[in-house]
Image (cartoon, rainbow, N blue to C red; front, side, top):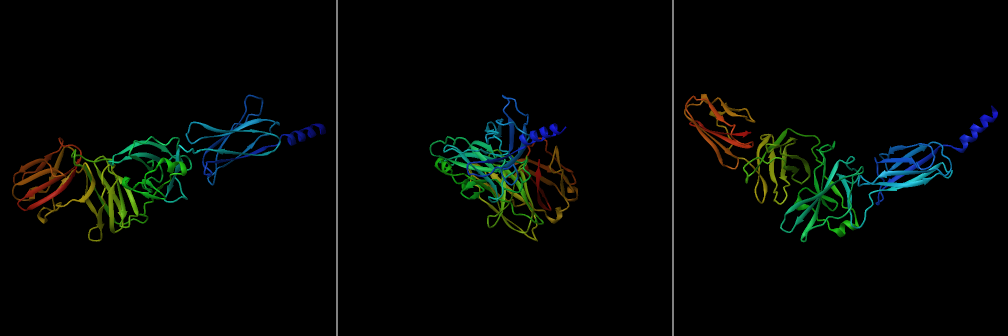
Length: 415
């Protein structure tokens, strides 16, 4: 029994546990948090089976492994996935009796022909969640045509890497743009933005071109500004966007709102009907503008206050050269017509005006687009119920004007 105990102690002493600390960095160097690291044996020779994996910590790129006892000269590998999400960076280690070993894996290696950098949230102390930001490469040419080239996801540390600087047509420049994905938990908190050398630009016209020489010398970083509406307020500013060329709604258009000092307050996209809304705003004046490529995007100033709490009648129009907002006028209700209600809204097959039977005399209904084009005009006799067929009109925003002997009133209609 004594001999067996001695053999057990010698065996334990000869094959004690092995600790491996793995540091994952890039070429800044900057430790990379949240990446998966693997340790596995060389299966070509007899050795203990220890396929292990863990993630680098939240405070840096360090992953710690405790391996079982190893015979001398056991060969094994430490690896992690490179930033291209395809190839692995692999380090080969051999156990020589030292029970504390280290490995340094360098990923996201930047070459002179590559394009790389970070996406920051408000400042360089915060970065997006893993693979929750998209970086876009955009070609801007001398005649202000703007074309999408390609896009790439950020990695686990807000880092992006493009292996080869894109081919740019003669007379053109490269713009870089970034935004959080809708799946990001902070999607509504940080605005999309363009690269602008340590700052940010909210519109394509303000983006700073990125030359190949600039990309080869340093990282091209993008800052997404934080919306500053922390406490909220009683006001809502909203409206709709139309395309004056097609006459229809403008869905999926980005609209941003800042205060009068150009500090971002928030952003949104128009819905399928072209409708947008900014809610919970404190009283004050704001700038609202879009970011439509190849077009001017002048800001619209809107003021809300105690006597004008909400503003719902903003119309953004897009034509060949600009995307511009205005506040609709002429949407009024005379006192004699104050009880008239339009329903349903949004409409389906018919538009009803409830209460018109209390207004004496004939009535004229004019349905038009917000650009002024008349869609339909109808006459109704005294005490006749006003019902307007709507199944033939396309989805969009319309104005319905009611003319009576007592006055006129205009209603906004959404289909």
